[in-house]
Amino acid sequence: MKDLLDRVAVVTGGSRGLGRAMALRLAAKGAKVAITYRDREDEARKVKEAIETAGGEALLLKGDVAEGDTARQWVDQVLEAFGRLDIWVNNAGIRRDQLLLRMKREDWEEVLRINLTGVFLGCQAALRPMVRQRFGRIINISSVAGLVGNEGQGNYSAAKAGVVGLTRSLAKEVASRGITVNAVAPGFIETDMTATLPSSVREAAEKAIPAGRFGTPEEVAEAVAFLASPLSGYITGHVLVVDGGLSGASF
Ligand code: NAP
Image (cartoon, rainbow, N blue to C red; front, side, top):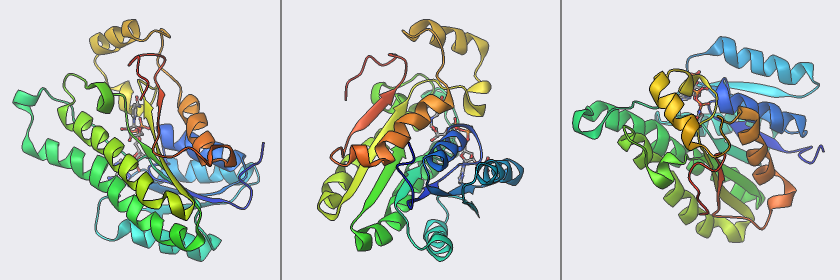
């Protein structure tokens, strides 16, 4: 169903993994999509080409989500290219796993900087045109690690839990302006991020997941597409868990 025709979306970290699947899904629903990336221009270009080959419109935006005015500049570029901004997905993220006793302060700070401060800056930048339009959909990518914790991911879990608190607070601030703010919390999903997991961690995870397998990026993208769609207009401040039953959570 092309229920996002005339909508304009931004997906941060849209060059690979979950962000790539989200960009393709939102474009398939009719949205014009801007994809941000930091390093992998080759991969970002492939996503843009895939959208255009399917008849859609796409824009590439380069930069670090947590750096200075980058997110605001992206918003300006999107408004110049497409004239509006309706959907903003804060997806870009990293992990620097280590047991807390051995974790370096720089790995703590870098994960908080990108995974939490980057989301704050993305929300703030996206809100300006959305408040003027009195319409918007912000979707923040958290993780089940932020809900139930994960060994070796103290920094990542803290950032992702922070994303949930930010999402719920902002949802209350802007609901009256026609803007919804929700989070999606994936479990283990097949992307570059999980490709480097040690085989022992991977096997333990597969045993712990009631569905018996890692999820696909497309399964997460479908949850994002729902929260971006007209069907979800009365849902805000929600965390949609997409984890094959791993967390057993209902938040
Ligand atoms: P991924 O395959 O490693 O891709 C990460 C994406 O983020 C890339 O497009 C990368 O751009 C971009 N990125 C990273 N740091 C950036 C920065 N500082 N500024 C701008 N862009 C940056 O990761 P993924 O698995 O798709 O994960 C996407 C999101 O889902 C993350 O927030 C992650 O924490 C979350 N998540 C993933 C899983 C999972 O199992 N995969 C589970 C739960 C939550 P470049 O390629 O250009 O550098």
